[in-house]
Image 1 (tube, rainbow over the protein chains, first blue to last red):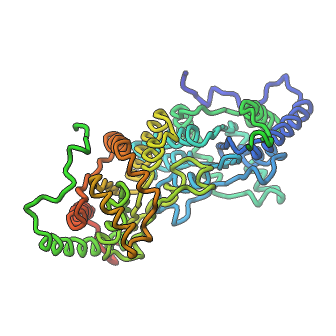
Image 2: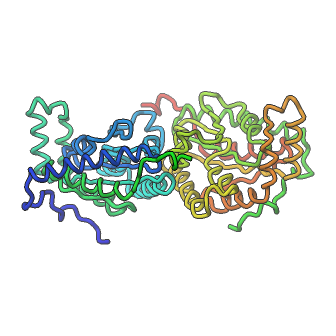
Image 3: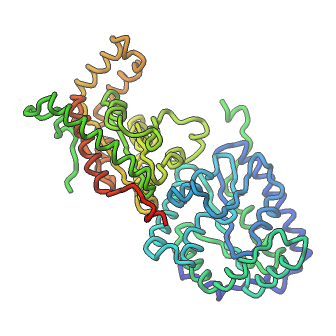
Length: 249
Length: 249
């Protein structure tokens, strides 16, 4: 498999698509995901981990809300990773992540994830290349462990937004009172490190054992549709079903 | 390094040693361990993981109590791994273990450990060879993660008792009211699987990246002395010291 270069990948929806039609299709996909989520919960054989990564304003929260809108709160949970606490800092970087791994029967959404520990930390040179490489190996081993030892299906999405679209969205957050709760002055500073972030994302994507899905994310409707398609298709393959009394004997 | 064959390794103390002298020396070692434990706690740079494995009645609890008797409860904690709970079973085998990894400044004693998930589970064929091998790789990756990302010093001890000594001790547990709280009829059944356990232990010991210490364990006094020697020697190498105001600036 060739190495991915993010600047070569489109961030826009294909022009041929009609927004309203896609939105209708997305609704069906989202309903389908909600249905399968119920049988996964009932069956308790599989677990599912959804990793959402992307630059600020790329739509991670939006995907978590929209694509999984029909999943029962009993069966799904979303964790948003922030700056580690003092207790978390006193442990290895996967300690706080492993605790949150999904139990059989459950789905978990990671908004940001263990990948931040090689992304932001490498961009700011808080860790050197050697540690980043060791962490990359540890991530691969960790994800393989979840797969082989807990039947975890891992779906990783990079929400691929253009730099100009990001700046547009950050300004909207600053200027629209409805969105100001999401605004953080620091986001503009991080945005200046765009090229460094792209390089680190490419490193993570190209060195992951479990492949990433790169999602064009400049239009919310196409972003949600693309993620929902992949999620539904993957969940269908689990062929999970509601256990009957025969199964429980 | 050659492969270890447990049946070729002595379980007895060397005949030249005098029990009383060794017991006195052990007291000094134990005091030394308690001292260094304080500076590790104050410095908060290092963490220490002590893994105690061995057949029933090999003295895991004894080592935990005797060798670390002078360590402050603030700085050290012992976890005894039992049959996994329902919640633990719904996760990968390292999930419950990783949560208990020592924070910087702390020492942790594992009485039994993640190794049980390849030992007892292989002996009873609850997992096949392929899964045991995958778990072995996951254990190596996990222990390396603790080392490189949390400054964890990992010391693993196999308490090497002979089969005849084990049976003698199990009978004592059954017949001595003071020890009956430790008695479990099932232990005699497990003891019949001695050869299978030895084979699994050899597999784990020979496939670990971080080496094991094989401790002759037929005599409690020599067992404690041997472990204490290795622990103290290892802790000294950390060169931990109480931070002064200069360090904290």
